[in-house]
Image 1: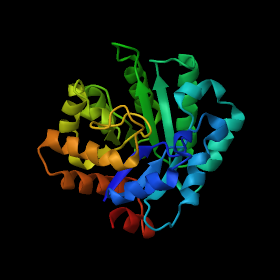
Image 2 (image 1 turned 180 degrees about the vertical axis):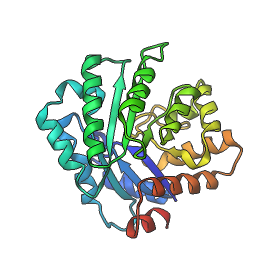
Image 3 (image 1 turned 120 degrees about the vertical axis):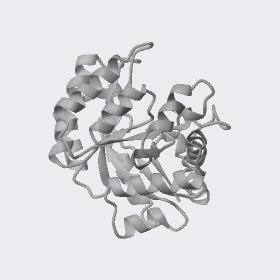
Image 4 (image 1 turned 90 degrees about the horizontal axis):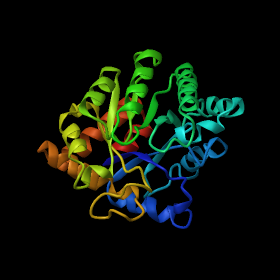
Length: 278
């Protein structure tokens, strides 16, 4: 079974056929999905938790765990009420991480100093609740600026031992290396299949196998051969296949090891682990 370690199941693009999408994922061998709880901003970051509970225990569908966080695009909307809401969500058992949080200097939908302040505050909240963080990082075009700031903030402010995930990794190998040194896992998405994504494939070939994850980032970044379509969790199999290709191993090995990595990292036990691995 595979794990889709990052999908936006609360997207309104799934409202008409979410059940069918989840059944297709199960049929494709996806045992667990991490539903990322950023919503359209702080007001709706609880929706991933609601979806996790709505589908809990349903036969023929993956298990859904959730995260909660304020995306850097919406950092300008982060106020004390939003931070209190995040803190409350991180206390729910289905919410396994804070995220996606971080810095986005490509779109700059929120001022950079506001992004950095929201990132720092959310790291503080997550650390207090002993929850790992899921990182979004996108630098300005032709620069490593957001990577430099994100990794420096993690190195300086994130407690050792909690770790996290660099989601949809697109950086240089040096960025992955710094994150690995901080106890992070590196997750690869559908853009690893794109013809011009050699840098991403080179990084995927080097990440230690026990620190590797795969994801869809659905509904975004559909992998080849479905590029341009609405992405869905069933297609994480195409991501795993490409990772296997660049590493020269069998796709089943990538499926098995990334599932094991996810299960171990989030300390899933009992029914949780059984559901992931069946």
